[in-house]
Image 1 (spheres, rainbow, N blue to C red):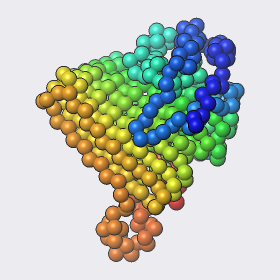
Image 2: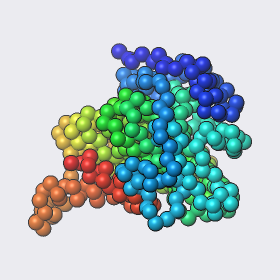
Image 3: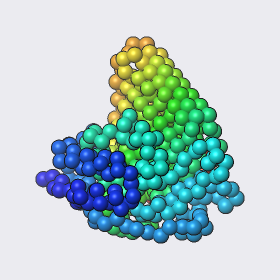
Length: 435
């Protein structure tokens, strides 16, 4: 028996919310058009995970309006820890469904860098946003959940870096959740134009123990010719949420989009990360860590598709499952016809820490061209007994030795996060989930 897919909102609700947020007319119509497609679109079908009984459409329907902040020192203590106190910050904060704080240095403003909430972007940066919003990245009609994001979008951020601009310090976004009824339908757009460089890091943080809402996140990252874009994320959302996350990257000639993702949610989750290497000589390196616990079910699909010549796609995923949790790693390296000289590599490794936990790694190579290189590695198993023996022979207790091994196992992604506060948060969350 499947969960009824009756929608929580109507088209009029969607239009009314758009008008309330003072969005541009084109976005109101965009939402309504997406809503009209919902009933006809199928649910996604992640490999080896049945989600027909998962609830993605029923949730408290009111938008939660929350406090705004005059400065970062007004944030709750656990949120302030993400930001060092000795420097200026380029940061956007969303409190439940409310744009709560934005700060961008005067130097970056003068260079044309944009950092703003998604609602304001529809009005003040209409042509730019329309160029990237669900056009070449995530499409509205891919399936029901992408259309839901387009219709119900109630938060998000727009980051734009013009040509030839190098952003030295990371741009950070915090999505702070402290109301059990608040659902997050966020849309994130990050654009690095030709010859530019930026690191964007987002955090999902919640103080709620068990949530009632839904999470539906779409993020689109675009790198122009010879641009460098690093997208980091630490997702820490509570039990009770049914979560869908789609993060998509598009590369132009000689550009690079890298991903460093710490996926630490406690609820049932399906997450996909897909990068299209369009331009010749472009590349993408993806690093992901996952920790599953309790009875949660998680499915992670990672795909790098090479269209251009001499592209390079590298996938590294490490995960740990404990208690009765389940994690599926689907890794896909694809080289389309015409992708001469391209390389597709992937490695997926899962550690199982209890007898009732389940994990599966599915590496897939789809090669449509002859003159390429490709490879994959996948393992699912327990903590290496030889490593454990070595540490215990040095006087370390077994439990502490296991934690040290697991921390080392997950370190590749932790090290990639360029903001010290975010790096510390991920390390703390990993430690907490492994206790």
